[in-house]
Length: 130
Image (cartoon, rainbow, N blue to C red; front, top):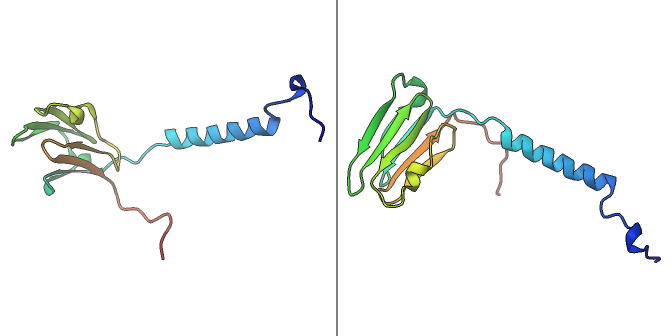
């Protein structure tokens, strides 16, 4: 095999660049594809469901206070829900922000409170297993 001098070698060929552009375009489409609006928010504490809120039916924003060792305020508005205030030390739950898309969730671990946004049931895309 004859080796070419270093200055004559091409690191990328046209087909490599085309492949990179196609993969990048596919990733951008998947990233920016609009997600389904969540229909309901399920608020649980220590594994017990406290509230199931239909986010599409909220007309006036309101707050839910949850007491305990760590107190929380959950803000509910049309189409979204979030941890607004928390007395926990790390405030990760508050920094999670608004939850509005199906499948989104937030947890306050010290208070053992979870918020899960759910949407309409969907068909399975694929089945795995035996």
